[in-house]
Image (cartoon, rainbow, N blue to C red; front, side, top):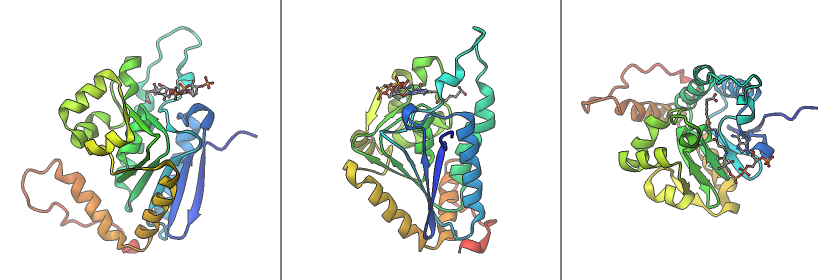
Length: 239
Ligand code: T3D
């Protein structure tokens, strides 16, 4: 039987989604994108779900696109933009827009789109063994999946530019000290801390948290200090 590309676990008030292709460091195939899309839609539709924990199976968090899927059998240069429009960009928008907090527990290397998927989550916890790699430059790509947007906003333009151009790996503790992530933790404490945080969010005022998420995102594009969230359009189900 084929492996399940993601695993979903229901906890009281939140869900855990585990990227599950450990032998490929959880690199994305189309099947994995589709499974993740369905799992996120399902979590969003479930009014008892008030937080999400995203992590990876095995020693990696996610190595981005599965490059084996991009090997051309005919020797032609593959056209890559389609997967960005069809899968990666909608995934990043979905993670940012979910009406409850999304916690990434980065258990190991997060590379390429895998790095930017982690950084799109609301709170990023990382094991000390984890590294963050904008690996795109090594294979002739521009950081995608929101990388050119979020990275300079998290760590400033000088560091973002150098990381994007060199593809240098950033260890978890440095990522924390640069403000790229919230916290680095001893490896063995990562998952228990992530669960604690999600359990906390499960009994928090979710509608308010969703509005905080939106207000912070909109603040990047706002030049005045006037609140931009007067048109509240969230469902009140999770209030
Ligand atoms: O294509 C489009 O649709 C456009 C969208 C692109 C989005 C992207 O994400 S582009 C970036 C793609 N990702 C990468 O370029 C990262 C490639 N991987 C690496 O650079 C390294 O594997 C890591 C730095 C992530 C980890 O290095 P290390 O030394 O810890 O592990 P490793 O030995 O390189 O990898 C372990 C196994 O995973 C290995 O397989 P093997 O030899 O044990 O059978 C390796 O081939 C496999 N693996 C790692 N990354 C990928 C992968 N297999 C397929 N695709 C991968 N991305």
